Image (tube, rainbow, N blue to C red):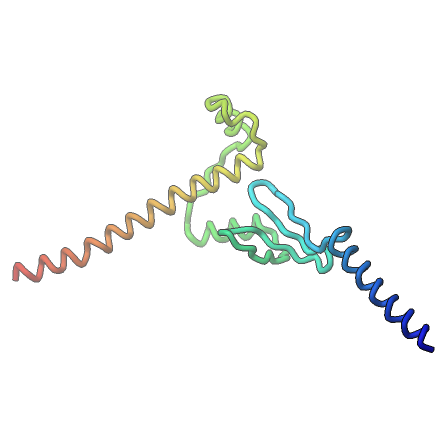
Length: 147
């Protein structure tokens, strides 16, 4: 009976070591992929995924929506005009004018345009609001001194 227990304990120990090496080296749980301009981490065991944003992994949601309809509705809610532009022709003209853009695929170029444009617009909006609110208290102080 002692040999049976000893063999069982050794077998369990060897099994744990083999399982550790298998899951650690041969079957890693997470896979990191570069998709366009961002990094995506996928958990192979559960199917969950995360996107690397602002030096943090943010969980991605699995929502199957018709994003074109959602975008159109949001645009209509803000009453913003939607320019009718032939994207393919516009990208071709952009690449003709700026040769550095020729080797970049359409999807990546459109993502970069969104990032650059939104960064510039949002930065300018923020700074104009900041300067407006920063000057308002000074004007009130000057108005109170003249009275």
